[in-house]
Image 1 (cartoon, rainbow, N blue to C red):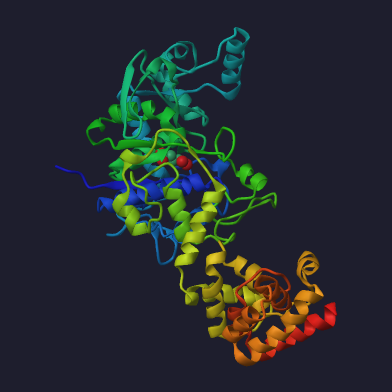
Image 2 (cartoon, rainbow, N blue to C red):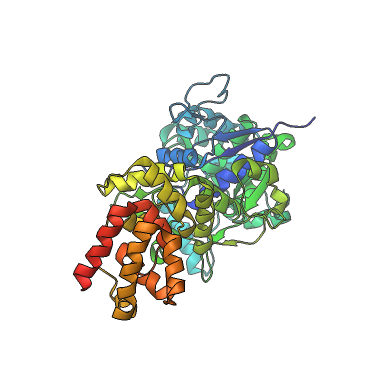
Length: 511
Ligand code: GLU
């Protein structure tokens, strides 16, 4: 029987979602959609010490902006994580803190089957054991090599255990890591991996103090209950994989254990190492999907606020670590759904290239119609207090869209189409504003105004005038610099009256 594909994105709301996290969500989404399966969001918030308020909403808003829409876990009309089970959301609640009551019995089931035990060591006792090991030049590890001399139910009578469970509120349940077992695992990206269990420790699964599971227990129990078929997550979770394999085995769930894929890291643009939130600030590119302000008031840039289109962001993320096996670089979401494959995800880290990120945005901007760009650019014009006819804005956008990578740059290259220059670029003036050029240029400008561009160009040729220099003088008058659109285009946009005003003005200002 083939299993229905069900994948989950399981973020912990410990801060804003890094672009690497969005990529993990994206790959999960593409994988599920391609197979006609389900993409689930589960919020892993059992570590109350690392909880950051606002992070969960940030994660959901980021995914929405990208068009990574969950089938289960979040109510898309309200944007809320679902609390009550329903036909659409059968496994609610999807926030682990609201599933608190589920986990204890699973931890205790492992104690009963001999795969886990109660540990009563205090923080001081553990600190002491650690210090002693260090003094002997070793690292302390709570497992078969040490557990016999530590305070846990394996070394106590049943009565003593029962008494301590009653009296104390700081005990934990630990996994009893088998000794010297080769755990053989398969990863869809990394292939076959083997680890000797003696290198691993007896991880805490459940804590009496807050009656909460740790990540490992909650993650495995929920993946099982939510019938997850494939786990696609960041490489930082690979070291946890042997424990997860052993937990499935201990629960007797090996038959329905999901398949695993661990995604490569996103690397810094230069040098080595993981792309960090500080890199963005240092090198001037966003590392987060949306702007974020932390509790210290520090702000981090987001792709959205920096003017990236969500389609461009999704496309560039898709290409960081995956390739289609062809030369194609531009993909819509539905094309990605079709083309994506885990087999084409690379094992090695993906170097982030900020210039390439801009290139993606430029490509998407070019594909937009003048109308679409005008919708976005109008907001900028409004902020600047500039009033312009809609048709005019559309025309401007159409004319300049090949020259910019972001909508906000339209202003940088086209402001003169909305406001007349009041000063003139000094270098250009020194270069072009010479009597031998501007005297004929001003005459030619009048021909443009009265008889049109063609006639003006004909006159320049007939009189053997220097075409480039003449045009640059006129452009200087219209733009304030010798760069910009063709004179004919500018004339058509600003109209005869404004054109003549600018020709007159430059003569007044520069003499
Ligand atoms: N809560 C974990 C995280 O924040 C999930 C890891 C997993 O997908 O198993 O990344």
